[in-house]
Image (cartoon, rainbow, N blue to C red; front, top):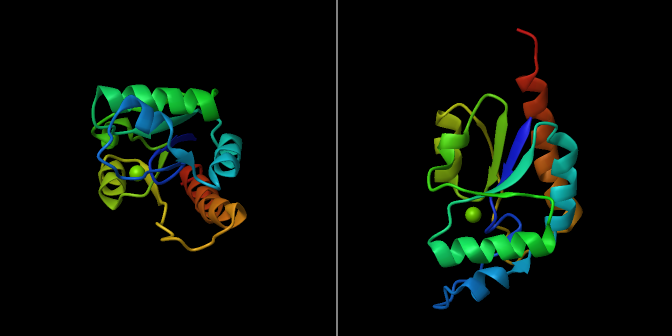
Length: 146
Ligand SMILES: [Mg+2]
């Protein structure tokens, strides 16, 4: 399966400010579970793993590129305003925005919702296993013999 990970709210801690510079996007904190989540997803993504971000503008794209190179140099970044365009029967999108998941699922892909934890002190293990359980179920369904 191929896995796309949204960035803001999934691996990067988006803080809204008036500063929308390249530096702002490049300096976002990594979410506490990001490393473990990416490592786990790598295990399942035998057909590829990439970050998939809608971005806002060129400064955002440049900042996200710097961020990914710094924290996850082996994971490419794909920019798409309409994430559904990348959906297929063997692709999974992990995203915190329901409308992205709906579009992805409507286009034939699989969606996993990343909840917002609103300051709850969840462990990296908790978040990673939440996603992993769903990946396992999807994989079983995806490759089931009909
Ligand atoms: Mg997001």
